[in-house]
Image (cartoon, rainbow, N blue to C red):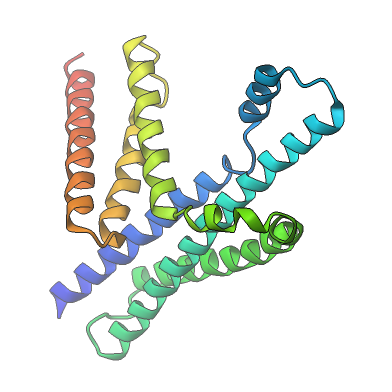
Length: 218
């Protein structure tokens, strides 16, 4: 029983950390100013009304990505809460202080995600109704793909800063990317995808170990 308790508690903590990282990603998916700027520069559009439309479209797509991430986070949090309840009921998970705290945190994040999903759905009502032709594209946006891409971007950014000896937050960014990838391995279905993510995560962990070794040797 002790082994099952420890394993379940660890899983709940991993999922909590993973979903917290996912929630952090939503903060940067609310809009993409670079998209608007590049589009305006490329086509040399001068009419402010067209510029406003491009800007609004960019914001709406950012909100779609936010909604997808919040929905995935809510799904994972709900599954974790259900697991905790089932394991406690079966006697495999003791309602210790640590368990109560992680369940409390999971529940708070879940309620927050549900609230944000409702708010974003309201904001996107016009977007969905006016742009029905984009529904297929929207359906192709998956949380797993967004999370993986964000983790890759995080690693690439950290590696670039490391190359130019700008070491601020490098370890934090590598560690956060590794957490995102670890979470992905628990929700992906395709064995090939899971293996690929595992390999990428291992390469990040090796880099983290090298950085820690270098820091201790100095």
